[in-house]
Image (cartoon, rainbow, N blue to C red; front, side, top):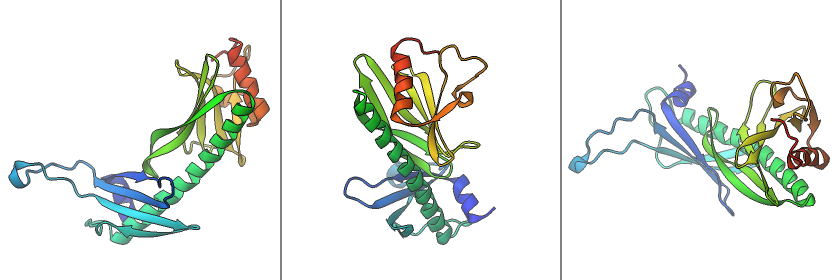
Length: 223
């Protein structure tokens, strides 16, 4: 087993993204299955936590640690390489989601919907735990949630769902492939389609989003 494989299997990893006005990512590594041995005064001893602080300038990230990572099967350089790779992957995915949320928010506002940006807690084997952007849209009594589902799946490089609230009924799904977001949805009366992934797709645009939202508002939507 390589050092990077050991890190992926043996550590719980989370990434804290920069806040406003910041440019530093923090990647935390805590051993999985830590046994809380008795420490001083009978209090449980805390597990070791290694935290990498990564500042990106272009595609190159400089890494510093709160304390040097130590593991019999993984070197400090393995940890640094792992942390830098996780943040690169996260930056690309969050950038793609942020562009999507901005586009959908603009379309929704043009169509008369009120919007509110939200964050969703997510976990990814190549990133760890992190937060991803989503969007809540409302028009009169209708509330729709644009929610990220996953960074990758066979044949696609991103999945985001549209849900009718509060029942979380599926309206449509957005899949990223062919270099763009594609909107899949099932129109009333459509047969032979088991799920939204199999439904015909249109490139995401204000017109295609409006079409789906109008079907839902008419009460003719078939999940």
